[in-house]
Length: 144
Image (cartoon, rainbow, N blue to C red; front, side, top):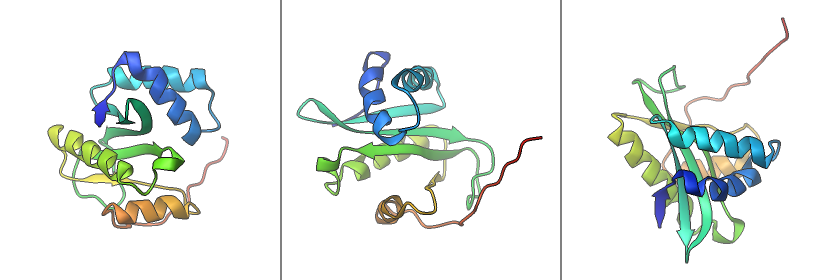
């Protein structure tokens, strides 16, 4: 079962998010999760199996330019995580489908995502889920 979370489920989603965003603390992620739950332009979804949360997805609307797209806003998969024992069983596919439905309800014509250049597992998942590669970039920054 896939469902959009409520504030009462923020902690459950946060514990899964910690497995993906390992450089953040539980408290940081929980605060962000609570803000996203209240944001009409974002959705946090949980996948359940026998009342156990086994995966989450975060999607948002992006109104800035999204690489490879022609419309705005664009639904954007900001993050997805499925517990290892449930991978390759269709959970990620169902989470992404629900994110796409959410984006369509918000008026989006396109749905996009990204992954780090070296993340071959994420690249393979995106391709299996019907995404096409739009571009490869390296981002730069400097202090001023």
